[in-house]
Length: 105
Image (tube, rainbow, N blue to C red):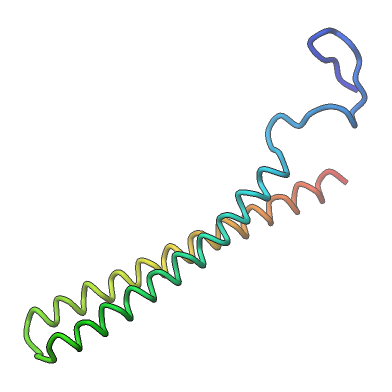
């Protein structure tokens, strides 16, 4: 039992949880999951496109070519890092919600 602002006694089942909303947390987790796959797909598509255009442009093994490859690989690694971070956020939210549900019982 708790007391609301009007000094009425309210049963526990009707008390709002002020610190989290399961619906909002599920929405954030699902958006994070979807965005992680979008980021991974975009980084792979851009990497493949850049490499393909590089091979069409010239096949010279010079210093600029090496810098381009380093840039291409760094953008791919950046996309993979974003994928891992967003997946961890999504799974972390699901895990915290499970822990909260178990601890309430």
